[in-house]
Image (cartoon, rainbow, N blue to C red):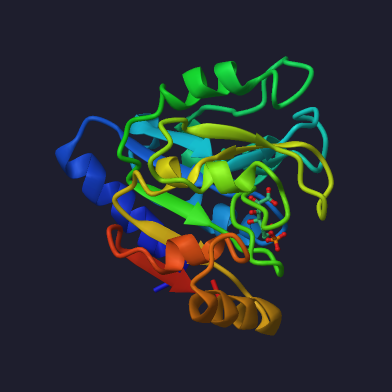
Amino acid sequence: MTAASVVAGILAQALDTRPLASLIVSGGRSPARFMESLSTAALDWSRVVIGLADERWVDPACAASNEHLVRTHLLRNAAARARFVPLKNASRSAAAGVGFAERAIAEIPRPFDAVVLGVGEDGHTASLFPCALETARALDPKRPANVAAINPETAPHERMTLTLGALLDSRQLIIIASGEKKREVLERAAASGDPLCFPIAAVLLQDAVPTHLFCDF
Ligand SMILES: O=C(O)[C@H](O)[C@@H](O)[C@H](O)[C@H](O)COP(=O)(O)O
């Protein structure tokens, strides 16, 4: 089973019992091949709503944009018929755009049927970065907000991210993390049990949402 076939199966099962299915995907360099494989799945994509786990606050035409990644690699083939809900809006900053982003997330059926997360070599996931001041609040599962503006010190661009509470409001989580360095950071994160140092630990250590880990996908 590949990450794409598992996600396709989750979406197909969701569509068997509900009018709409929802999928949240992450950005970065890793997901392109996964997205292209998923885009060919034989699904009624017209009933699938796709959102982002996070977004860099850049023009969607920019190669650094996660929206650009989704429009290039996922909204093609059969999946071209899916409905995509961007996180980027016309606000001059992510902080100014939080209200619009909250209203965008409200358009995606919840709990999300599948949330696909990557992991950075510093243990971040989505745009929950260990060094960012705003991360501690975004990791608080009791916080009602679904999105947060993050200014990472160790990565470019201001970001909009789903909060941990929103990411865990899902039926299934899929972590995609290739390479030895990411395997090591996953092990260190699980051993540390400290989401402030390794935000991905908050996902690894929870047992409320079934989680699939793909180190080669
Ligand atoms: O916007 C982003 O960058 C992603 O959402 C981020 O959380 C990503 O999943 C990791 O940084 C891994 O990215 P790579 O696949 O590029 O290593």
